[in-house]
Amino acid sequence: APDHHKVMYKVTEAMLRDGYPQKTFMLSWANGPWSRRRTGLDDGSEEASFLLSQNYGDEKEWAEHFDYLLNFFLHPLYLKIRGKPVFAIYRIGHFGDKLKPMLSMWRNMAKEAGF
Image 1: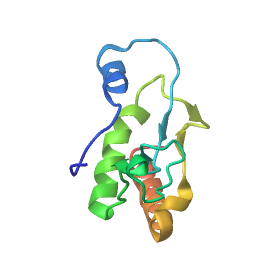
Image 2: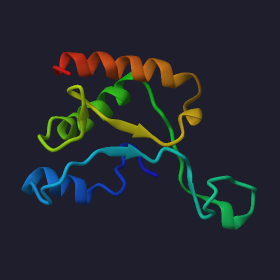
Image 3: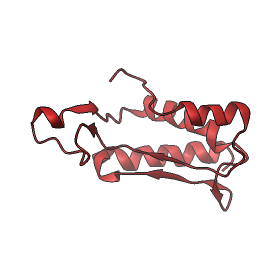
Image 4: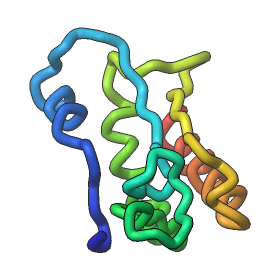
């Protein structure tokens, strides 16, 4: 997949533009590799070839990702608990050693944004 791709974004971006539907919402990152098999596992067969791999980038890309998400977090209907936006990550084990520094950076950026 090309760098800086977005997947399944049209509906959520439309919600930001037009405000419909008027429902509380939250986002979840389906961060497992997307393969032709529902398991997400690649057994080497042609049927299991990846449709979309996951590359977790570096601090620059983490900041870009957070800045994109911030547009949603600031929406008045975005789900918040104790004033903080809720964001789910499907498979945290896929991040390896990048998870902790990325989440630390995102927490700091969230604080800077007023959360």
